[in-house]
Length: 97
Image (cartoon, rainbow, N blue to C red; front, side, top):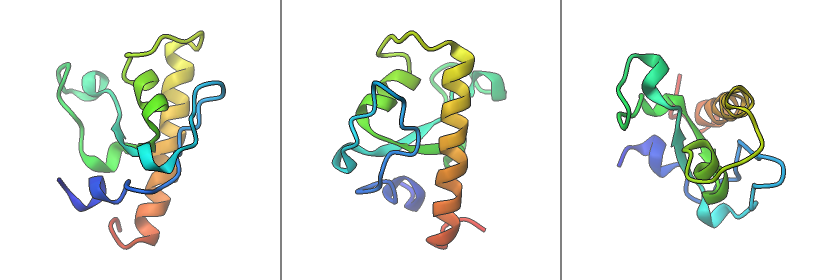
């Protein structure tokens, strides 16, 4: 497990999907962007810098395990916003330059 992945422990969710986010820092993990559009096959993860701190419920939604009324584009936009917020936190922690 990388330092970036470990850094998610106890953090707040940065995806915060309205109607789904459970707001529980105890469930937060690093949720990687879906790699298919980034030259990776299904099931292959992109680099940790392309992950967002996500609670278990938001992670289930962005990974497709939980259905929602959000479009794929809306989910990608919210996930990307979470990635950017997570990157800012990683810079503050000295884990990303």
